[in-house]
Image (cartoon, rainbow, N blue to C red; front, side):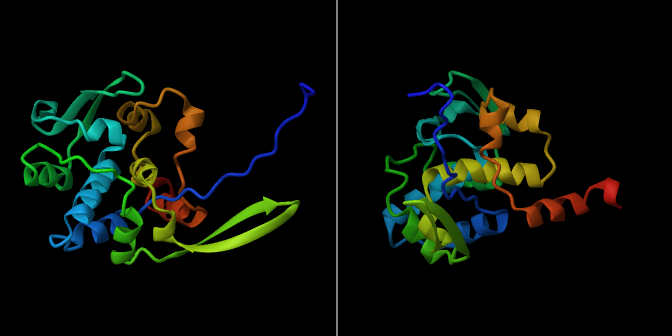
Length: 199
């Protein structure tokens, strides 16, 4: 009850997919499984736009303006203007700009398994005062929110300035935004190596 008491917390396993891993999802032939096909497409859209499920699932043809997606986000009522990649444009054309309704998390892990997203991720949790480490395959940790983290983390790795990414992701708070950046020290070093400062 003391005001000075601070509840201990641990960061849960939060992953993102690299552009190479996203391409693995895109390359999957899922025409014989409509549910997996739709879920994969939804996830790729979110990976390439940072839009939440509640936003991209309601995109209409009028939201597509030449080479951008323009809409008001439901959660924050922020206007966002996002460049539309060829991957995303192809998906919208596939469905004639009318995305079918589908729960995004359903069968997502199965899609990740089919794409070979089997990198081992170790997760440590403290239970009863003891730290327990569990190994997971990456696809086992996939959720819809992994897509939003993927867009933000990949933009950081590409060297896109934080203020520009925040305008696209509709983040107002830098602290919250930074919680979406999940790049490793090695990924960060590889990105920095391409910077002119290190040439």
